[in-house]
Length: 617
Ligand code: F6R
Image (cartoon, rainbow, N blue to C red; front, side, top):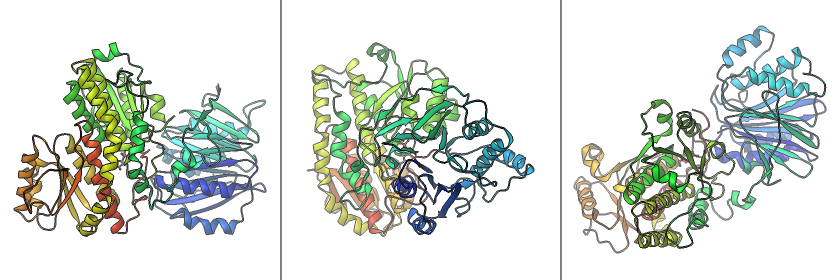
């Protein structure tokens, strides 16, 4: 979704902001722009389209100022046009603003401002906020001795808006200053060497500093030359906490890979090692988690778990449900975060509430967490981004530690969520019925996961060849059972989001209750058929497809034998423990989707209409 960059320092702002905008591209956007304050003027360059379309425009402006803001926009209010791109400048020319989020009462404010002589060039809610700041600046003098008129005008304007925002504002009268604020939209201040940066995402500022202050909802930061201060909407001062980003710039770069998605698929063995690191007991029989903030005694009182998430993370919840119920024998419910937040579902009093979110900024997931907390439930988060809103609002949780995931289609974050889910299942199981020796076998199996994933990745050239053959199809079914049913959903989601092929995931045996009507030589099916008690049942489902001329790609355990001629293509993965199976089985479908999308010439890392973190409802 939208991205924010800001710079105040001694260097020329434009080049630094442009670099930040390029690093934010992965989040999904449709226009970009920047504003540099120079010679007492706010000079704006903005364009619908890609950041590269903006580069020429920037060159024409010959920006030389050392204070500026930049934005990537993902349209909500108003179409994708140059005028609707950010930054917006107030009609008196005094303020420039970039905004992530949605101002819900913008229409009302717009009417008021229009009645007071303010004009509008765009259809956006953001321009309304920019003019509202200008209105307060023009109307009311500074709040008192030592206060900044610029800061107070922003504060007053924010006091009148309903909705969500991450904003950064420049004032033509205040060179070397930026005021920024947040409510339900991420914003970080980078504290560099003689310079300050603002960003909605650490990847936009990590090339210049690793020291950051994560702003909280309702906080404003005022950056002045050589200093910054943080305060709340109610004018209370806030003592800043400077955190250190633990990953490095190379983690956010593609290196030798063609796409971030490819890099992240191949990074999974390492990502899994990082997720597990330091999280097993010394006796090797269970998992240990540092930040749960739930004692073992409290956890033993829990009668059920409820997991909420969106998209791929929701699939991780479904796998986790299967593993907790299978190994710990505790009932688990899974809900879409977007449904849970409005469903007012009856909850068992001894429920432990969980959310899973890679970004920790998905608005529906945050809303679900807040609703559970409002109802008095303890709410924990599984999350990859240290300092994210979710991480800060949850009562406790587990960080995934897989480094930044830049590819829009989630891969390494997904398998790491599956790993965390498998570890939770172990942890809870060991508190109940799982024996010490079963615990030790389980831990040993989890520790082998990175090697098994490495082995599964060796199939990449074979899968690439299969992708070439199947790329021209326009429909595909993904079928799996038990813990691999969510993997069928995930395979279908991965394929549709990056290759635009229509795909559906189904429990394999459900296929005959409807989707079988779709089967023909034009609709291939991808089957997960791991060895085990239901292998033969899945083979029967394959036979039903084959009888209707449906092409079949079978994903099977190494050494499994399928009836001759049943599958058109076979992909194997190594034999593994049940808790590791979903992780290893994810690899073939990730690779298949990736290679099909590449074969179809799709922009894999920036699929159309999608955003990396969905911060609007
Ligand atoms: C799909 C994908 C999305 C996200 C979903 C939730 O590849 O990445 O479906 O999983 O938008 O995002 P997070 O995990 O950031 O809450």
